[in-house]
Image (cartoon, rainbow, N blue to C red; front, side, top):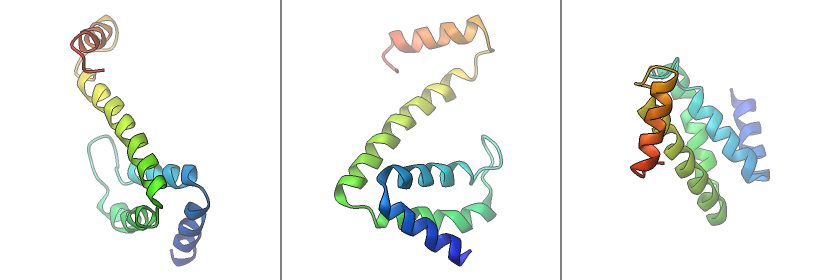
Amino acid sequence: MGFVRRLILALSKKSNLLAHQLIWNIRTNTYKNEDTPDSEMQAKLEPIARQIEIDFTHDARNFCERVFAFSDRLTKVSDTIKVYPKGNSRKEGKISMNISGHI
């Protein structure tokens, strides 16, 4: 994985947007499903994501933190409403979350 790792790290330095997409993809692909981490993939990919983050400029780090904070808020909404069955119950759950200020 040495050549691919070097390529990913070099490309991530060329574009903050690409670096963000790579980190997002790495975080996504270290899970077998919604709840089960894939320890083998984590061991290979997380060091790459950490290195991308280490190499960020101050502005790039701020951008990435803002984007991930926003996406984390969206993910929390999805986690909260997935307990409702699909259909009207889920829609009502979204509405009640919106009214209570969670969205």
